Length: 173
Image (cartoon, rainbow, N blue to C red; front, side, top):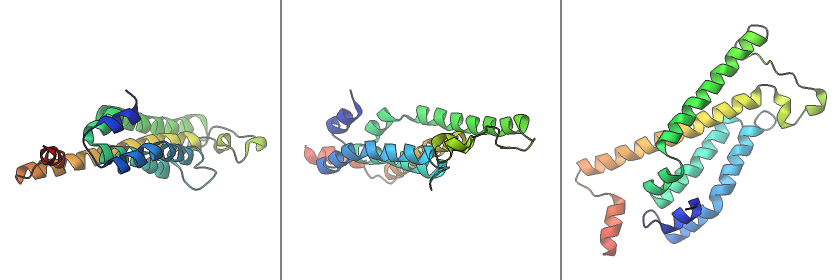
């Protein structure tokens, strides 16, 4: 089942208008986040800003369609693994700069020709670092959101309040 189909078929989350707008905007939001990560060394942006935008797309899907729909698209396990991969790439990039360049941590060891200036390939090790940071920030921010929402649901259960999705189902019946 495709991601947009999952957004339509779930009975949880927000109304049809919000789900439709989310279905239209999730792709452009993700593309803009990827653009920020890839061109962060040439234009304002970079790994952190792009990672926040990418995470906001998944958070928007989770808020509009419910937790199950959000986690079916980007699970906690996948987010945790991407978080670790982003950190690993970042550390390897720093150590490679130490070994292959002048001995300084994160030294640029990829040379750039003058014809490649102002392109994705013009940043040396910066695009790789932005990619690693984007992975790390996007996955970590999504994990923080899922943990905070779990605390909020648990707090409601302790206080004797019902889950908003359960309340919505009870109101319909």
